[in-house]
Length: 483
Image (spheres, rainbow, N blue to C red):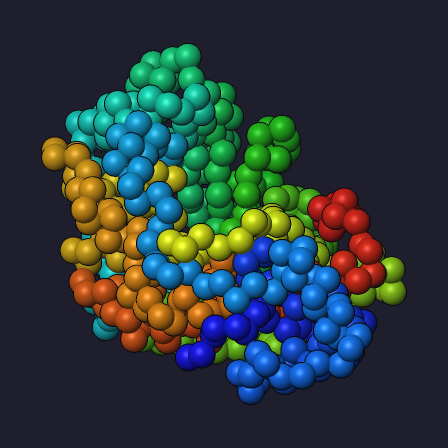
């Protein structure tokens, strides 16, 4: 692919303006119609010497002197922290997550661990972490987080509250072990076992919790059922949440709801539920779509879902633009706007340019941010990767980190070296190492199969961000999603 002399940019149109996203500076540049048309022809034909009208030539020359429109691409794909990885793993760990059990009292239709026909992930099992392994993991974490003044111990499953007694023991041990540091506790639960008694304990031990709740009863119960009976789970979870809000309102504000959307169905009841429910209407939430990467069944959006969801989102955007009553928008739609805008705001920091050695976004430093320790004491980059893949095991409690394997995970961008060097979405790529793992083998084709979807997502986020910027909507208006 010819790139020499061509500006490393991506052109974007909004209803109001023309822009070039400049990859080197990570900035948007407003363009006149003439300049946009000229650049479009240059990029489409691959002809940097194409004659330009005088006004366009003057404009581009001025911008070029300011550092924009460089044709510089990375020459080598390697993560900038590669040479410091051993230091990060030895002294700079921030968070450890302990897999207390592989058992769960729910059987959710979309669960990563529920499929028996696609062995790229483990299944539910009765295995649990021995207490001595959990204590050793805390000791390991303490020994490898010397440079951190704030540390987090997390619990995961299966359903971690099935091992509540062990959680208590580990929490109280960690509080002694990390005396003098800011220790926080976190865990993810289905909420069915989080009684008021347990909530009182966690509230007194600086714990935050993420609870999975997918919306109204008919929506939640469609996918999330008790393992033993197949019965619906919504009433149990909601009762616990109602009691916690009533008795522990301060701690309730620390609860984060994980709302998983199944795009095959209508989304009206989901949107309405979180806007109208007295307990959950103002709770913190993160809204995601079903992750079907580890499943043979793919969850494609139905026509009715696309129509309804886009209608809700359109109203939310119009409300932020002052063109629609905010009171008539839904909490879920406002959350989407908030997430997209603030993520773009965070990631679009001006840069002095690309380094000759660089790596696409996507892979985080494996183990440093979210070291995941399995019931067997094996180390994984985080809890989202395949536990059946040898590639993802980056060490164990007995031998410590395998730095060479961690480096391979960190530098998975090198699988598609040339494609990454020339991709305009290079800085904003969200392809995780799990998307490149073909059950124990790094696969360039599997990685590349994600690229079109990533570019579409990045461009959509850019357009939504620019639209709000076109109307000069202040970030405070986006963050204030409780309106």
